[in-house]
Image 1: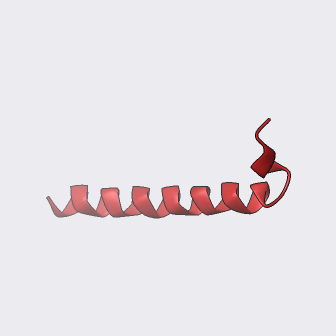
Image 2: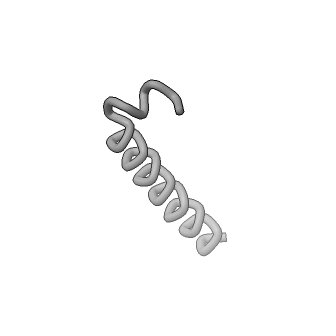
Image 3: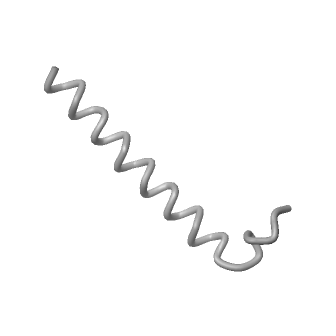
Length: 34
């Protein structure tokens, strides 16, 4: 696997998941407003 996964990989994954959740919420709000 990629070397960065061995150190800080879990934190990176959790960060990406958090960003994805925020993006989905923002997208849903935009759709509701329209």
